[in-house]
Image (cartoon, rainbow, N blue to C red; front, side, top):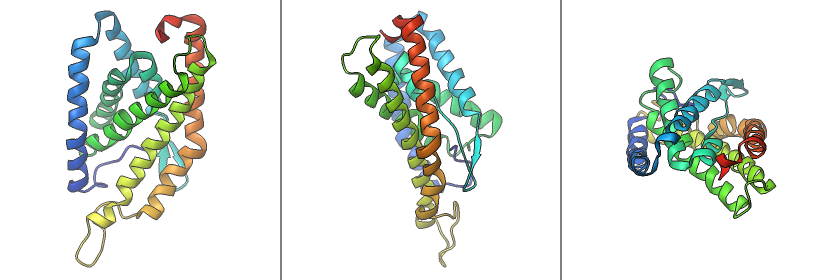
Amino acid sequence: MHIPDGYLGPATYGTMYAVTLPFWAAASWKLNRTLKAKQAPFLAIGAAFSFVIMMFNIPIIGGTTGHATGATLIAVLIGPWAALIAVSVALIIQAILFGDGGITAIGANCFNMAVAGVFAGYGVYRVVAGAAGVQSARRWLGAAVGAYVSLNLSALLTAVQLGIQPLLEHTPDGQPLYSPFPLSIAVPAVALEHLFLFGFVEAAVTALVIRYFQKNDPEMLG
């Protein structure tokens, strides 16, 4: 689900950098004001967890790969703004040091997984969990549903960004300059596997971790 270099044209990756930068700035400002010293290690752990879980790229039909992100789980445990930074840091390190995702596509990848994925997943979690107590089943159920929605939204955004390239960037005779696959190919190739497989894996992992904290460290969910 990491978009590599050469698959997005300047109009797309430039726009995604411009869209994502304000979220990075807002998250940094909020964390500078609200993050306590004792919470800083959890931010680092969240980034490390996201980094590790995203490194397990599993090849899927259609020539792409699928993976979990941990975005919703991190948002539930340390808040959505901290999760935005944690997932972004993981994606940036992967792109710069390991070539997993392109440098030009950092803005797009971070928006898809660290912005849209985090806030969609956390929003669903808050709606389902409501004012339920820490030990309520609504907590882990909301986190699971949120994780499923989060991962599938990230996959869909990735597919759409790839699929619109033939429309935006092409030669005068219509030959694509970047990603050559239209929406009719890109969306099924990227999104369907997350809809029917990886989304459920992400939901299950998220639910199990939340259940663990409910039993062993409920203060993390306070």
